[in-house]
Amino acid sequence: MPRPLVTLAAAVATVGLLLTGCASATPPATSGSPTADKPVVIQNCDTKVTFTKAPERVVSIKSTSTEILLALGLGDRIVGTAFQDGPVPPRWKAQSASLHSISDFMPSEEALLALEPDLVYSGWESAFTADQAGTRAELASLGVNSYVQPAACRTTGAPAELSFTDIFAEFDQVARIFRVSDTKLIAQQKAELASVKTNTKGLTALWYSSGSSTPYVGAGTGAPELVLKTVGLRNIAADVHETWSSLGWESIIADDPDVIILIDASWSTAAKKIAYLESNPATANLSAVKAHRFITLPFPASEAGVRTVDAAVSVQKQLKALGLG
Image 1 (tube, one colour):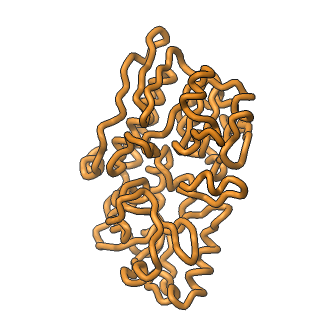
Image 2 (cartoon, one colour):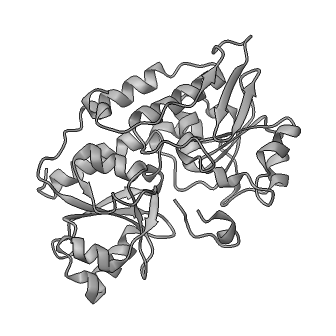
Image 3 (cartoon, one colour):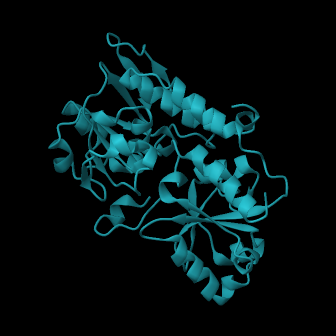
């Protein structure tokens, strides 16, 4: 999901029954065994990556990749982070205390290589370009493996519509790469997911990320759609076959969503978006705006990762607080 950049904006343009109801791509191919003496071979986006041993020095790009490593107890392997979208949740405070940021935005290849990583783990495939972190082929030639979150693949390999099966498959793949277990993490996530009850009121929702003259919204194939579908809200942009998309105010006003999900980020706060919605004559008459039916989520919870289940749980709780549970 694009976020405004200062100097790099142009470069970074962008289970149970619940699981069976979500469309899922075939989990990314993985071969090998999660043991120290056998390589793990993965087809990741358009690149085959071989891990002869567990990575020891990782640079993580984007909060989602950092937090998956923390959730698997691998914080001590992270030698540098970049392009973090918000603070790390308190539950990983101990592990995250020593995290070192090398850039608030996409790192340069020079800054990245100075840390001597053996893996760069990115939440965006677009990180791997010659003028940013370096191409995947170039990094490989220098002995540095790369891994893109499968949900963020753009060349090939992304799920047609994200499901929790896809998210859990990434946890499993990363665990295999590092030769650790993800059993506890997935069990916790499934237990939390099972607590989410589908809302049956037929409510519609707008997932509003950023922008004013033209809003940028969660569309029909990514984490926003998955969260909304899980809690029983109908995404008014569900028919747009993208993870994120621009959506005109005319269309939003015509759909008049019952609830507006606001993504809270330092560069586009929920408060700022509320102020815009209430002050703009065209949007002030939206039912959700007049009734102040807003739900707020932090930016890192809006992209596929360990906080996707958290986002569904939070939306359900906030719906209840609005009297819509």
